[in-house]
Structures are given as structure tokens and as C-alpha cells.
Length: 225
Image (cartoon, rainbow, N blue to C red):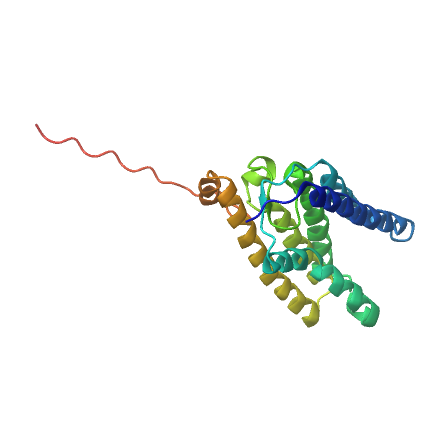
């Protein structure tokens, strides 16, 4: 775990803002043709772009090659796959209107909006590479330690239902492995930076928390006098 030089940190903030703001502009340019359907993606990209400008300075970060590979792979692997596959195999992305299509579309929209909400809630602690800025345990972080990734899983599950293919399923499997490693690196940094993180991790699930029903223990019977 290492600290990050101030100059490099500020440069990375502006690079991140520019990349996601341009991406948001490209998404917006598609709206006349695609319609309001891309609005959730636009909202998400704007939330990410703005988070780069308002986030705190990192207290510590994991800058190892493996940590960076899983972080950037988790962020961009599926997007790169979709771009390449859509160019060379466009027939994979022709939806057939059935029940799974409507369920998949709903999952994609809900997942994207949930991800945008989670990103904006953690905007002061946002990072792509594993870093500790501040510990967020409120809002969506009450139900999941990684609610942003919960939204990602919902999005991609919805897309797979809408555009089912073996190749896309395999891509999501590889992405899932990258995300598991990404979460592990992030939690190591947070545990070292914030001693209270271990208690939070025991209390809240990684992607979702299922409330447990605790059966109260019966009172011990009174001893005979």
C-alpha cells in the first residue's frame, strides 16, 4: 500500500474526468437515434466524471500491476468486448422480443441507475484503482460493501438475457473473475487504512445483505429453591 504524489493525483483526476465526460458526450450524441433508452448510461457516466473532480485525496492506494489489471479490466473489459463483438458479430445483438428480453431490459435499466446512485453517494471516495479515501457505510453501502458492482452484475445479467450468446456469457465469466480479484484488493487497502472496516465487512455482504432472522434464546428456567 503506497501514498500517491499530489501532482500525479491531480493529473489522474483530470484525465479521469475528461475520459468519462467525453464518453458521456458520445452517449448523448446517440440519444436522437436511440432515444431516452440511453439516459441511464448518460447519468452514470456524468456521475463518474464529476466524481473525479470532487473526490478526496487518497490516504493510501494499491498500485501493483495485478491490482491495476483487475481494476481496469473490471471497468472496461466488457465494454471492449461489446465494441469488438458488435463490429464483427452484429447478429449477436439483435434482440428477439420475448419475456426474457423485457426482464433483461428492466435489469439493465435498474442496474445502471443503481450504479449511478452508488457512485454519486461515494463520490468523495471514488476511485478506479484500489484506494482508501474515506469509509462510506451509509446509503447503498448499508446493504452492500460494493453496491456499484452489484449494479454492474445486474446490468450485464440483463444484457445477457436480452442478447444471449455463449461468447457473451464467457466474457461475463472472465469479467467476474477480474471483479472478485478487484474487490479483494480494494478490501485489503480499506482494512489497512480503516480499522473499523473489518467490523463493517462482517456486518454487510459484499454484493448484497440478506437480513438474518435471529431467534431469541429462551430464558433459562429458574432453579428450584
